[in-house]
Length: 269
Image (spheres, rainbow, N blue to C red):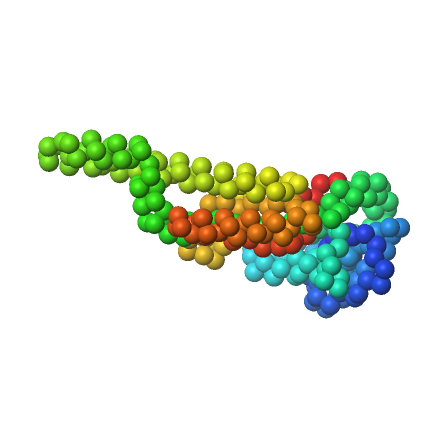
């Protein structure tokens, strides 16, 4: 038995193009189901395969299946968001939203219609941008801190003035001081960067810092943020990040950004 898998809800558009991306079930086409001033982007799926308990089981036992379906889910939303180079206003759904019938989907849309329309109005003309910061060169960053940090300099002077025997034992204490000050400086830089970009956005959020296994990078991530930016300010926002990239690079940090994305991090209606 088939059900309807919901990818996103968007404002109705004139002459919307067909979506070519394959859905979570590659054998089923993605299509648009209009409802009043809305369009639900959906595809048919086998309920036996995508039932809630089945998805939960595969999430535990088959990570490749979940990864493959999640990528397909996001690919459909990304295509649904763009028409003739223009970003459309839409609400992305989380993975695994399924309705047994069209009637059930329309009933849900009707129930939440005022909230959906209100939220679409709230995010109209806005884009989500992702910003990530990595500690690319730890030694370079530590050196930049040691050169400017007064606490470290003072401790180094104390050690230099001590007899050789005593200085040896103080070296371990210096290492602890350096480690603490480097950690504090990194935290301060991350917070300052987040707040600086926050001033150029409508809304912002800090997401969980991802482990290396998920980023596919050898450098540790130290900031994973998302910003909701007005379309007319998007270019200024990107220019601001480009300026920050040079500042971060000089300190041994790597700043990356991407977008515009569907408003995954600001969907609340």
